Image (cartoon, rainbow, N blue to C red; front, side, top):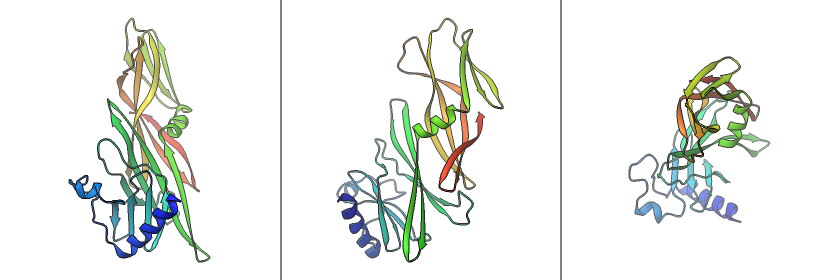
Length: 233
């Protein structure tokens, strides 16, 4: 019911264009924002696209007079707007919408999510195809291509093509070495993820962050994706 109501309201807003623009302004979270049921998160006249945030959860994406609800999180504790990029990520000669949101940040931690949206016309019907890439799904793919070793008080990072001696912990009990704090960047129609590496030792709950990072390309193709070009930075 919420999806239908939000989509209906935003269909009207897409046509009338009566909602104030808050995106890309320093006064984004002001009194007007909090009193607006569906604040405008993004707007592009060139793409004829608007994205409205649903206060409880989710967004409504509008292309022209058409709109659709998606359960994408966008609110966070640091009041950071989602990043929206249009590019041809899968080389099909059509641009996709890329929506990157910072879901959480605080106490030295952060997590992000990536959504890619295709919109096509077929037999007078609009087909919306959405793919979501979470921190956990990206980590699972990356962990198949990298390995962490701890021996002789030294951490070693290894991929299929690289090997690095990352850090030395004399007389420490290593509990876990894992990927943390993903960053998602878009360069030249290529999406990349960068993970920091955290080392937990001696029962500590706050990790040491190693100088090295893991960087990889997210290859989006035929509606799916894979991690490739994994490197130790």
